Image (tube, rainbow, N blue to C red; front, side, top):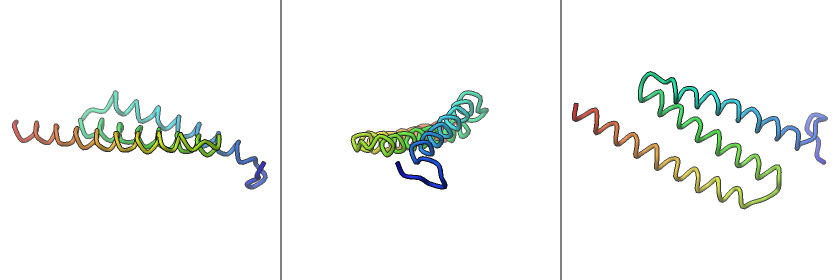
Length: 96
């Protein structure tokens, strides 16, 4: 058990995971309430980044590298999804 500032590392990683879960909830609220499309896309991008951080922290905590592969694929799909939505809404704005 490694110690960082007298606290076990597993406990620090668990607190970080809880922090990212809490901020993900705030991002989901922004996606639901967001008055504009830009607010919703920003909230969705935030949630995507938070879930990526949770996956990486969980992989480090458990010592399992397969979660890092899942995190990488998740991030690639999240990035492609954000690009697709941006392109769709940009094209929709030009037609109006």
